[in-house]
Length: 434
Image (cartoon, rainbow, N blue to C red; front, side):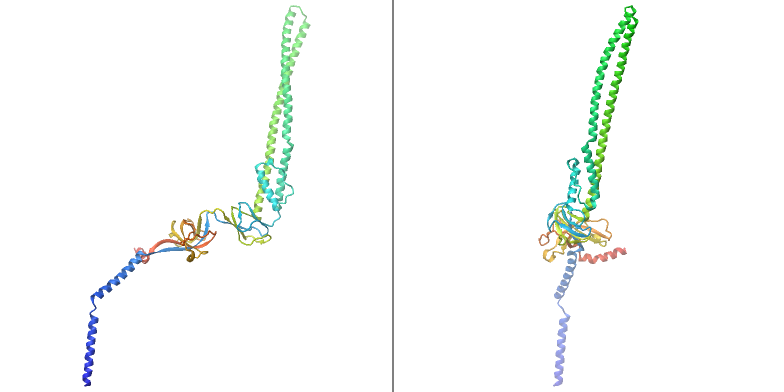
């Protein structure tokens, strides 16, 4: 019985094994076709996706925001105490306005006075009086003394009017000689008429003498009178010529006096111009060293809490002047030699400002506007980026313009698909082997 039971169990197991083998060995063809189709579709989708879908190739660099008229930094040229701070933070200032002065030996109001005086003096020197002699200009005192003496000499020259008075005296003498000349001509005419009468008388006396009517002595007397009139005519002619020569010489003297007056006047004016130019140049040097002057119209920005008597050191940044009329905004970035040839004008740039996180404010889109032809000493090319839509972000937020604002700039070189990136090394290998 036991042997029969064992045989029955073995036959059952063999039957089950045969059924399983039949099921495994005969997979339905429909399932096989669907599986192959699915795998093929997946592979094709991957290939098509890698060829169609692209992602950008970028060059990342840092960028500094500025404008076509950037802010101007004012730094201390010398060390010392601030004597006066004439502005407050964010105050609007005009070009040329004094912002603050560093301690020095000159009196500020005296420097301002002589600076304004020189500007007016340059327009018309004859409209102004002598400046005060006791101005305190520190290191500029000697130049001011030279200018003061030259102006004083010029005013004294104008007051005395030496050449004009000399010309007036000469003109008076000319008038006298002209009267003498006219009288001499009139006398010459009278004497000439007498000469004609004496001449006619002498002719008549000669006829009468030949006829024996008058004696020879009377004829000689007539001739003597005629000769005297002739001598008088000659003397009067000499007087007329001498008067004409004197008048001509005096007119020449007037011309020379006028020339001397012009030469002296120009000489004194040139001295004033030279000394005023020297003093003006020294004032500019003094201002560069001791005065903070606004170079443009704009708003002053304090870099520290600057108050009177506060110590500053040479090289310290004291003020920034923000232009009141900002021109177009630009960004400046530097890219290294590596891959710089890929950057082209017109390429898009995604800018992320450090002050405004891009996950909250979004990114600002710009365009490459220019690329420097020659690299800097540090082997960097300068790339300028413009912003057609201003500082409006991808979240439609208008960011404020802050000078020298730093950002990260992603220059989008080109869009490459995954398939192109895979094939590019193979293409290079193939090209190099060719």
